[in-house]
Length: 412
Image (cartoon, rainbow, N blue to C red; front, side):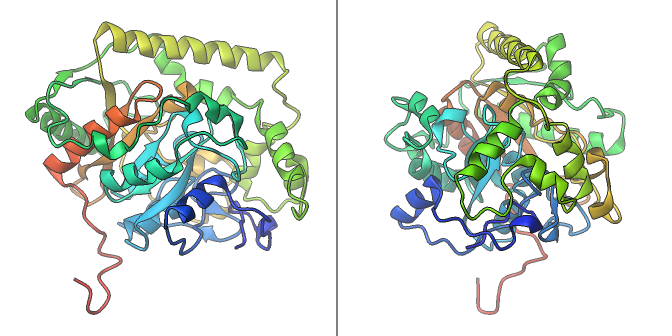
């Protein structure tokens, strides 16, 4: 099947191999029914190959990205499961905006072989599903060592017999959860009406966790470094060009061979092209990359210290501090990446740490827009996160299908 990466440049490109996750899913008996659209070269919800992906709960609004098609496909009940990628939040964002479950695994847990890289130290693949159980079942299949992606050797010894063993209805009882109240998006305005709408939903979610026996630490301290998460993420521009070039070199049929080739065509949507331009000429040998590595380590130590000091099982926060935003007029012509971005983005913390994070449905705003609540854990704590998410899901049952895709005739 054609693999477009959301770009018209690859509209006729058919790889000669399957990704490892696809091989594993097929071997387990999964039926692959299609490929979904994604934000062009792994960002946003627009692309030159297809146009705009729209939110299943309100087609005038953002579905989040970059795995927007995967999120909408599951939200609209077109599929039970979808493969998604997460470099900066691309699993959890579409899940949150689609009233679905999205699990970003610890980076070395799932093979990326067959995935075009964006930022290899942050890139990972995981499930978007309608239920926590379905996400756990899919993780059972795709997790584990793959010699084609040597980083997965770090996962050896960290993969349980089955992740379903962690699905416990009383899993919140005795769990210590720290609530992060500081918005990680510097553009977020806690006084705005939209922010307050989401905050009300998150407050109810935290109360529901407490009612199920969780010990809540609210709020947790927010060290200064947390205020710079957004900048640290955008500063990490040193991996992409090399990684894309190496990936395309392994595909003889690729229509272009380098990031520069891609950009020189002038056919990538402007907002994505402008972001990709910042990666041109950068390498991991540049001094700026050392600064990024050092600051990421400082961030990891700060987060782990909070969790150790407060004896936390996970940190809890809104996946987005705002509901799905309205798609602007003519988004395919917008040059500024911020013009097609979702406000209140808290998803970038987990990728910078390479830690796992699970977004589950938290409820709806008064306008009927879905809100996701995210659990962040330590490396290889997927089982613990699934325990917490499953117990919350079973206690609240916030998942409901969108009215835009009603049952077919004869369906229950």
